[in-house]
Length: 513
Image (cartoon, rainbow, N blue to C red):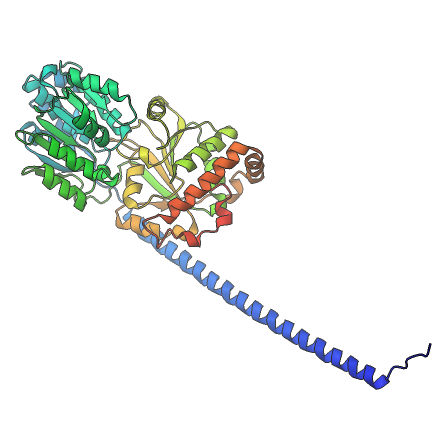
C-alpha cells in the first residue's frame, strides 16, 4: 500500500490554528473566572456591608436599651384586705390564702365592684386581677343569699382551659366558708357531667366561651335568668382566639336587666372596646399600667442571645443541662415543635414535660398541675400556656422561637417574677437576621440586655443527634413535622419585615430547628 505523505505546511497551519483556538478558550475561561471572582467579591462585599450594618444597628440598640434599664413601680400597695367591708367568711378565706396587702388593681377595682358598678380594667398579667373580681363576685352571692335552686348568679369567662381551671381553684378557696356552689365548664371535659352539675345549681360558674355558649343553647335545667354578675377575664386574649362571635352571642343570651359586668384586659384593642360597649353600662375605667416605665414584672432580669440557626438547639441543650436544678419554661412556635423537642430531649436524658394544643384536655391539665407542684423541672410549651396562668416559682422563661409580637413576649415572660419581691429570668433566642425585633421590644418598654455565651462551652453533640434522628423512624417523622410547622409558623409571622422566611438558611434550620 502506498504511503500517504503529510504536507508540512498543512500540519503547521493546523498547529497554529489549534494554538489560536486554545488561546481563545484560555482567554474566555480567564475572563469568566475574572467575572466570577469579581461578582463573588461584590457579593462578599455586599454581605460584609450588610453584616456591618446589622452589627452597627445591634450596637446602637444595645446602647439604647442600657439607658432604658430602670425599674418601674411595684404592684403592691399599703392597703390591707382587712380594710375592705366584706363578710367574715370571705375575710377568713383570704387570711387562709396568706394575703394581707392588696395589689394596685385590687385596691382600685374591688371597691367599685362591691358597690355594684361596671368596671373596665386595664391590667397586665400577674397583677392580681383574679382576686380583684372574684372577691366582689363571692360577696354578691353571699349578700343576696344565693342557693342552688336560684341557679347561676355569677359567670366568669376565661380565654383558655388552663386559666379557667386556675380561676376555678381560686374561687374554690374563696368559697371555703360559704354555702354557695361552684362549677367549671371547659372544652375537652365531659359535657354530660358538666350539664348535671349546672342543672343541680352552680351559683358561680367558671367557663371558656365555646363551652359556655354550648350549655346556654343546649343544656336543659340551666337556670341563668337570675344572673347578677358577668366577669370577663383576659378579654383581648378571648377575642384574639376568634371567640368574638361567641362572645356576642353569649352577651345577647344573658339577661341584661340588673346585671353587673366587669371586663379585664391587658391591652385595649378596638375589638375589646367594641365588646365593652356591647356589655358594659357606664363603667368605671381603671388602668394600673398607665405611665409605667416598664410593662414586665418587677424582679425580672431579661436578656437575649444571638445564635445561628444551626446552633440553637445545641445552646438550648447546654443551657438546660446546666440548670437542671431550676424550674424552666421553654416556648416554641408550634405544637409539632414542642412534641419533637420534648421527645428529643428525653432521648438524650433531659427529663421534661410538655403542653400544647394538640393534647387532650386531661393530659394538659395533669401536666399543668404536675409542673405547678414541682420545685424543679422543664416545661416545653406553646403560647397556650403563656397567658394568665400562675405557675409558682418559675426561675427561667426561655423563648426558643421568638414571639409573634412584643405583646406576646410580655405574656410569655409574665410567667415568672410574679408578685411583690419575686425574682425571675427570661432569655430570648434570636438569629442574626431577627435583631431588629429588639427595636420593637424597646418601643414597648421592655428592657433587655445581651447575654453572651462562650461557643467553645456549648455541647457539641450534633453528630450524635443526627445519628439518633436518622436511625429512629418515629423521631425522624416527628422532626419532619416540626420542620414543616416551624416554616409555616415563620411564614405566617405578623412582623414579616423582620421574620422573613426567605432570609432563612434552611439547611441551618433543619439542624434541629
